[in-house]
Length: 71
Image 1: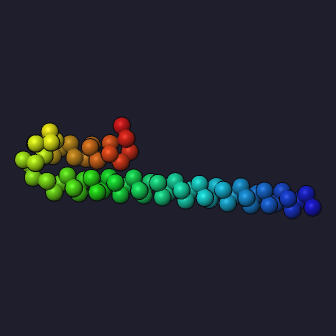
Image 2 (image 1 turned 30 degrees about the vertical axis):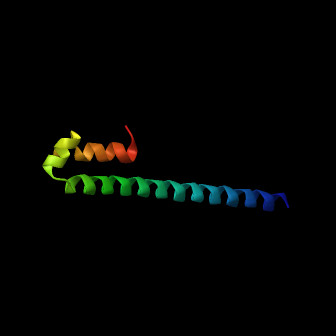
Image 3 (image 1 turned 120 degrees about the vertical axis):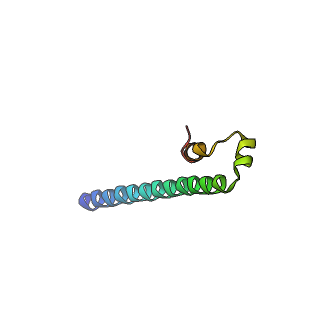
């Protein structure tokens, strides 16, 4: 009987690891979506609009990285 309990604990541990992996993948995908959206939106602005915001085109990728992943 104790063998069955140990087996269940192992299966539970495996299920928790799988759940944690799925959560991590979802979080990574969400961060990537934020990055892509930020790049897309900033790239669509004119150079004049970017200048009004104090942003140069060469800064778009860095700003998107900070937006999605933090500093």
